[in-house]
Amino acid sequence: MGPRGQDDEQDVHRASASGEALPAPAAPAPAASGPGEPGSTGERGTAEEETAGEETAGDERVAAVRRVGAVRRLWRGGAQLAVAASLLAVALTGGAIALGTDRGPASVPVAAGAMDPGMLSGGNLDASITALQTHLRAQPKDYGGWATLGLAYVEQARTTADPSRYPQAEQALRRSLSLAPDNDQALAGRAALAAARHDFHGALPFADAALRRNPYSERALSSRIDALVELGRYADAAKAARTADARRPGVPVFTRYAYVQELRGDVRTARRVLEQALAAAASPGDTAYVATQLGQLAWNQGDQRTALTYYARALAADDGYLPALEGRARARAASGDRAAAVKDMETVVARAPLPGPLVALGELYEARGAAGDRARARQQYALVDAWIALARANGVNADLDTALAAADHGDKRAALRAARAEWARRHTVHTADALAWALHVNGHDAEALPYARQATATGYRNAAFRYHRGMIELATGHRAAGRASLAAALKLNPGFSPLGAERAREALEGAR
Image (cartoon, rainbow, N blue to C red):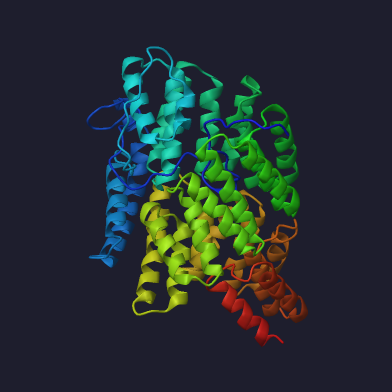
């Protein structure tokens, strides 16, 4: 694989084998206007775009507002009330207000012709969006500008945990395609948007259509790998990664190639490819992103010292990069530095209240057990429900998030319904594990066992999966296998979960 710089693309999470990183925002601030009328006071689209889908989304938004309102009542007077209030504002406006950054909009020159999509790699996303809106007000028929704006909204949703940007992204991308049907930039953008909404079946045909127009589109090549991975088509994903590497080698492709190898149990190749990607990093954003992936890979193997070294390198490149801060929190917790872990994770959820960090912080509070920690933990779990409601109101499939969070910290029957629904859509190691665990907590252990085995069948080295399998094996009378799975989980990563690791130790001791 030959080294290359990055293109201006990253998807929602490492679980989707994300590509390059734009620096994460430092704190909430007013964002720029919507796609329909760039720079307009109301931050709305055109009348046609604004009314499209309004009736179908209305009931969902009302439900989302009610869910967030319940969290607000829980948190009245609390330090994180501002986050809930911001999310409530997003739901009430249907996406007219977004959480932005505290980096003030820079003065960005606006060209008279088509807008360069590479501007998104500059680092200040809000400034880029402002410049795009100014440009599109003057050049409303620039289909490339609309496509770039749509992708900018997808990225803004990712960096701010604000799913209300997704409908605006869709509007902008549709506008681009109305101006130039089948332009590959907008088709690749639709693929990225579908993946961000966890609609991987929808992402694949958009990526394929973009590649028919431009076989060397890095964004489309990357989104195609993501979709195949998240549909559980790992052999096809490996083939797609090799094709992408041959056509557009670079950081986005390298990181996806590595993740496919990790899912298949080849940690050595995954590490080698990521190290090559880090050597090819051409910007602080590249460095932060790839170093974080190396940290995550090390953490999965229980190597907390190496993980912390990589997270430190990522934060040295971009001290506001939240995935690195989240990873450092998990590694610190696994290393026994619980106070520092709590502080890091509190920073993460204050700026991006996504389900994974919220659950992790809640479990850190539970594990700490100080006065008021049980209530603090419940607040984190309640906000997961609020985020899921908002995500669904904006077209995001949140069943996997629901299954993972609710199985241990919510409505167990809702967890099982969500896990079954997600398994009906796609068969991945992650959905198999989520369904196995949801079945287990609902007392259906015999049904759970084949899914737990399927979750570990590819060789993917994940301690939580081994823990879940071990508990299910014990519950079904497979005591020797259960002890082996629990021991394997703790050997692989003794600090894989603030609560799960301790429960694994207790179960292993009790099974002897």
